[in-house]
Image 1 (tube, rainbow, N blue to C red):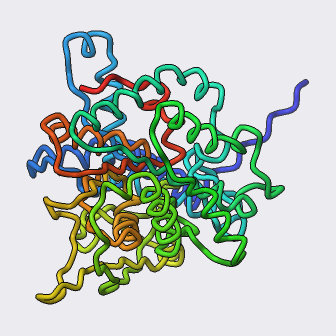
Image 2: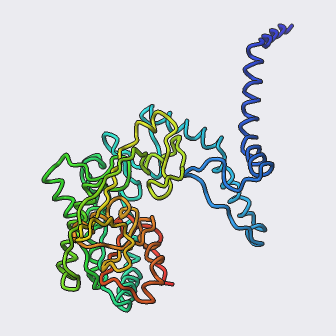
Image 3: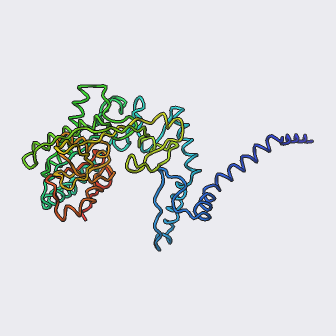
Length: 405
């Protein structure tokens, strides 16, 4: 005779409430992404996303082939997911929770010592890929040099060293550059020398500045760019090297001096890339978009930025220099480092006005293409200063350089 099985315990009201709340929460989370887009884009007719964030992707172009093979649908799903404020909020909360717990994780950011952060691709670059691309890179550099010379000017290049190179003691566990990073900057300079293009060794200038003052902060702790002091060190080194090569081509130095300084407390590009609770907002004071922190953690990670203006003293009075002088002898084709006081620091060190064409991107190829029409038509500038960043040479654009178009 078998014994009767015990009756199961009845479900309590509290257990039912927990289960149903979990079901409702899951349904809301799964349905929130399409619901937000249906209301915001469908019913209200907005083209722009509800919130502007760093993780957003451009809308994919639908073609017959991409629709047929399903790739357009997958790309569209990713774009809509990244546009969702619900996804943004959940991801931001999770990333900040991990950071508070001492276990941050990011594919884009390397977390160094004492909250010194670094862009991940710059920490240990792929030297093998860099070496494989060398023949195409050298040909591209020679083509650019020829283009500038045919425009009636001379080409000079500055390569801004990565923050990881300037602060290895803050970046690496042992404080030493790894083998793949150690001589990468020298290899880049050697390529320009092989292409017949003069450069300045800004890495050596930064190392000397740190040796003179080990506590000097030449770069921001939580941003990829240099501080004003770093821009000044780079500008002085670049100006000295440029004048040593092309000084006889330039007119006499002029009375250029520092003007006003604007101070703004901003969140750097690295916290935004980690995926914390931040938004991208238009800000005319910085000439574009800036990252706005939306949490106490983001606000604490912000740093004060100083932007220095320059001016020229003339017999008729003081004239502000804004990088737009059409008669400037020096044309700077620059990256965001030029925006971060770089162009003004170079002008101040040279004692001459500069004109700028600036487009963000470490590779320095976008501003070059933006200046192509002028270079092909002939330029008034006597010297073209082309600015790039060390890590840009390990990006796809330089590993597979395309012909100038």
